[in-house]
Length: 327
Image (cartoon, rainbow, N blue to C red):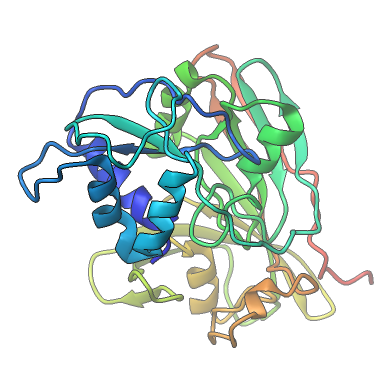
């Protein structure tokens, strides 16, 4: 497990326990990515005499004790005052530290992030295929939020929701931290109308429009989600917009937001989305990163009532799906 994942789990656990608000980060962003924040725990457990002992115990298993020691020697861990922390300093429960992780080399995604709309509160972006929304796993600097922070010089920019890495289209970002909760709540409470476009095989025997409901399960570590018997936890409306050359253009309206929901539902209808590397068959490793075969799924429309200004908002993607036949 990488250091980024280890830190992410520890940080989320700390936040869930309702601890006091941490001080502001003393380190600037690097490549559009925040410094990692670490809090020395107060929970009962091993007793560490020094900061260095704790950090080696905490991260040594993931990245190696020698590497942690080298980071301390290089002054890469700092306290709230921005001063480098020595490994020999006494352990102090509840103390906050920060450091910048080492970024592994990432293959650049050769498509731009378009800006559909921008004001003092919001940035609505057209995320290209293959670009993750936010740092996760092996995608850190090659993410939409990191790119936009750098390109727009908005270091506090944060996404209000997430769009799957292989899906292109609209993502709403919030400029100011004080507005973030209001917009994230819109998505959490399903107060945003979303419309997707997909290209998939045309089959006149499939009666459309229809609403698909099923129970979708996605297990950690398993690439593809699956449907199983039980109470439905997902709902999508599927409409045929047109067809050409054996390819159908579909309008998809999700009422819920399960992982891979639209891809699973289209596959269940016998209409797998063009260039889908998981449905109906999990393709060999690397297929999901073939830039010449983007998944033909686009988040086309976002519509909602602005929770801050109260005005109706509607945004439409300027991207187009490449596999639609010319004739």
